[in-house]
Length: 130
Image (cartoon, rainbow, N blue to C red; front, side, top):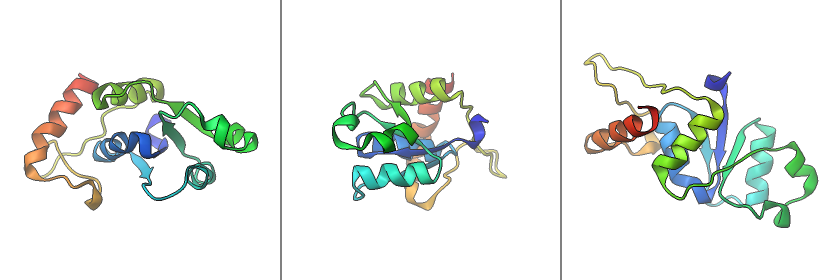
């Protein structure tokens, strides 16, 4: 189901991966891991590999590419990237409400969500999910 989709966002869509995590989705990102190693990990963990790199076939073995679930993100801008992934994956906004009723929550400590960025998070959610 769409709620069970796990993602792996390469360095070209690092911000997209961060925002998917903020929205409550399981998304691995890697700055230091080489493309091949990161894609091998994505395949092993049954993750959808998100990238803007259209030259993967030039650098990676065909056997690996055939096993991978790859989504090529077309947009350069984060809100449009989120819309693309949401549309292609039929995702829904998986927010959680705190006891105070606030709709914005961070799902990982590494997401760096501070109280000042809650408004940004809510604005992006409105853009993407309406």
